[in-house]
Length: 85
Image 1 (tube, one colour):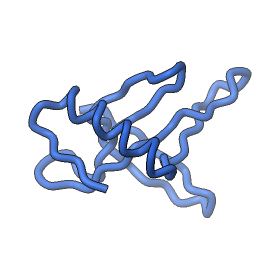
Image 2: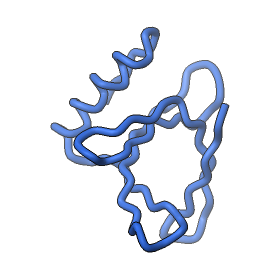
Image 3: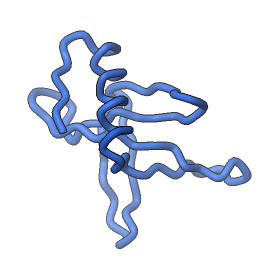
Image 4: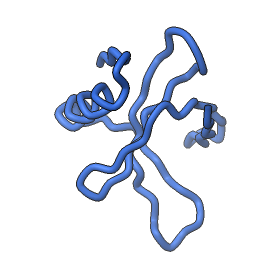
């Protein structure tokens, strides 16, 4: 399983496991979990990268309507997933 590491504003690093990725209306999204197996906390991140830079930039999706729509998309992609807010 692919992993990705995020650098928080405070300088701390956080490792996540990429469960799925998709593009909606030209924006890339990642569904990640905090553990590689079993019950895990899931998060959806939105790509807000500057195309002129090499390093990608992601932020958590916080808008509730956008989050609900993305949860439906990811649930369809992952047959056995039961995502909750």
